[in-house]
Length: 231
Image (spheres, rainbow, N blue to C red):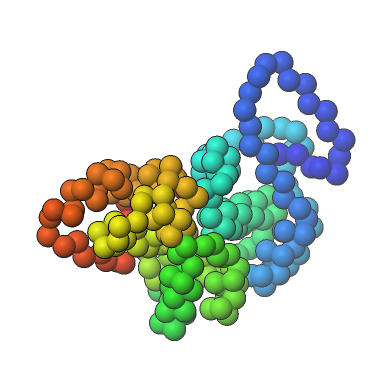
């Protein structure tokens, strides 16, 4: 971890790959204000000394697909990762005490309905985490916890599942090409559609379409189990 207020000198002896994440002071202040905590005055770490932090490592690894295919990333995913990163740094290195939430603190029924309706209406496009949280009259951090408690999935995973379900409907009912379905379901292109669909269904969209057009009607379910998804 590095303090960008100080002069930085880096000596590299061999090639390597890295992900750099800058965290502005304003982002920490915004997070503290959002959860009603005191402003973080400083971060407790040794400048330039490697930190063995499993959480930060996992956050970095989760961003690798976004780095490799930036055109395929949705705003909900990036907002969710940004929130997790700020919360971890603020708590572990900034000494911020976050409010304790009990396990039954999910969304109210009207909030669940509003959040899912908003995301359903934007299957073809993109939607920001902040917009959905605002509609539910919650801070982003509270909304993230409550949505997962109520639905079982983080918002971006729920949205991705619905896009795959919608794609399955179109694969059966319409004569659209795979590229056209990809666009209608909010995927960047057919390649992105193929990767995500494969991670959910275990097969490619084309193979799934051929197999199910000759089988009994497929009935999608929003509450179906969400397999590990490709971003």
